[in-house]
Image: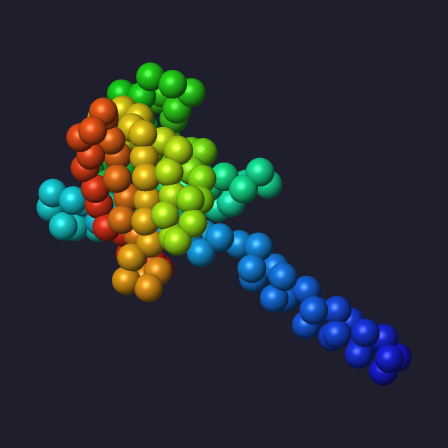
Length: 145
């Protein structure tokens, strides 16, 4: 029995660092901050798919303008779906050095999808998220939760 416990403990100690390295540093929960007002808007959970791409889903809205809002301005598969639980970041890819690109981000209040890029800043405590049309980009800084 003692050898079995020791084996399980050893296996856990060996696998734990491997699992920690497998998760991308941007994976986790982030508080979004409106770039214009400076006020928090929502919490987004960024996850890593099996193929290595990153996706982000709104898990909570902070002080929504109305209860249970939907994306009535969306033009894709998210049209008229609840914003809470909605995937707003799709297909982001790591470029190395805490930088990400190649994905898109949805701005639910506009219903518009933008090309996006992200960069970890301040030692990974914050995330600069940009949405771009051509060469014009707007960015927000999100805070790790």
